[in-house]
Image (cartoon, rainbow, N blue to C red; front, top):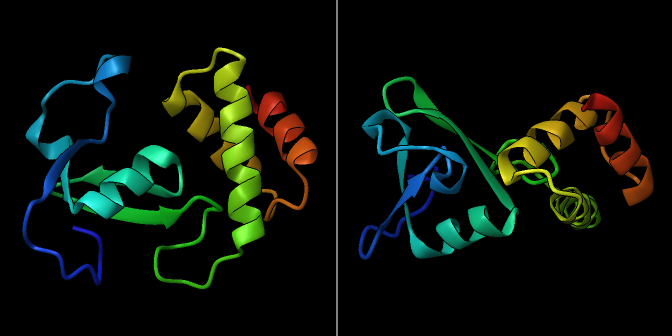
Length: 122
């Protein structure tokens, strides 16, 4: 569950490795999320990584740790770039990895700059 989330009813099981990209039902890669957080993951606003045994890590779309202050404009830029990469044919998981690589250079200021950095990482 997402740190600080108090919802403990009507939970969803999230496949960290998307089934549409060949992911399976490995219990170690299934995260239990409330409906709101599950929708946020699929909308690209929340990222989940890790394993059940090692612990899951949650980040905002802009790469900041969940719970840390975030920049809504930066989140919007990341979501725009994720959408653009997916429209270019990248699978969601690959698009996320490219954006994460590009974010290592710093917070996004402009969608064009971040998109170019993500494409260079491919």
